[in-house]
Amino acid sequence: MDAFKTFRGVVATLERANVDTDQIIPKQFLKSIERTGFGPALFFDWRYLPDGQPDPAFELNAPERAGASVLVTGNNFGCGSSREHAVWAVQQYGFKAVIAPWRGEGDKRIPGFADIFKNNSYGNGLLVIELASADVDWIFSAAKGRKLEATVDLAAQTVIVHADPDRVFPFEITPDVKEKLLSGLDAIGLTLTHEADITAFEAKHDVQMV
Image: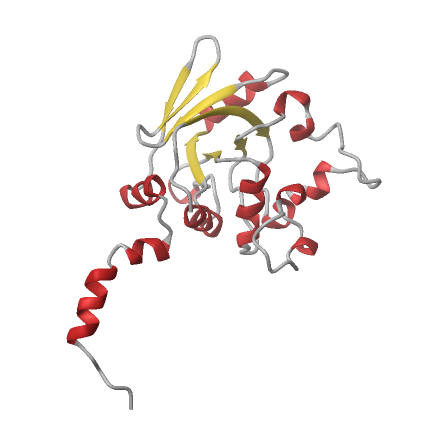
């Protein structure tokens, strides 16, 4: 996968909680054995009218959201069934980062992302960022009826929303995941960085299979 680079892009907002994977990429699009071509199917049931035309009432179809690369949405994004296609659809639409809030505290805390979606995102180079609910609500408000841009800097662990004035939102990410994204290493790529050690180990432990 490609290494994650700092970028500035248009913000698209989707003020909906508990967006499940069947809404992200409906089941009829899971038949393909290829890993490409899923972008047009992202949020298919919401994006299009029955006649196939874009629904003007859907948030992402607003003119000020054209070319968006940062998606800001509600909590528990990516819940439901596990399907890597959901991450591919988000990426192939053009999003490089997704921001969602956590809500509640302690045992009642609801995360920004479902665990399986989060892990699939990291494995495919999609950055998912959790912010406090108040911060995400501020972004929703700032984006209403206007084109809004943000700079996502993984190395500095910040999202800078270019409003008037700019506002900086720090975020947390585990060091190992951060390094994998910055280096562009998925699980296989990370393993291959130890290829010489693996080869040396195998040479010393030449076990014959019976």
